[in-house]
Image 1 (cartoon, rainbow, N blue to C red):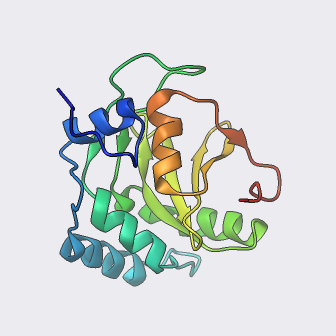
Image 2 (cartoon, one colour; image 1 turned 135 degrees about the vertical axis):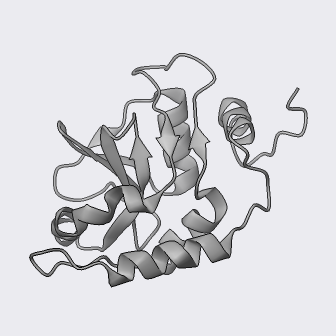
Length: 167
């Protein structure tokens, strides 16, 4: 069924992405720029603003507006439904700014998981995080690895103060 699997993603991740409407080369820069403009224009009541940077715009262009569901049970935890819509985190400028400062980077929204139970964020290096009521989680050094973590139900790493170093 998915004989055209790319080597970029594990088979289950590739299948879930294709079922959601993704394909290699997908690129909607017009939608990504709209989200960038909306986030840049937002100012919280406390004066907090969103950072917008290339890693985020690229992720929005490739995966924006997709809702990705896992094709099976998770390995360690239940897999999440992922919705790529940075406006899900529009009102979290202060929260993302605070976490970004703690991690010595900048964060901007990427989307949400588990029907708005958590917001997904990306940093300037492309690392992906999940913020929920239980804490802040590191999902991987890039969107591809974060997708694999979420879709396969791998246990993410709870953040303490700094993200793991990438080799």
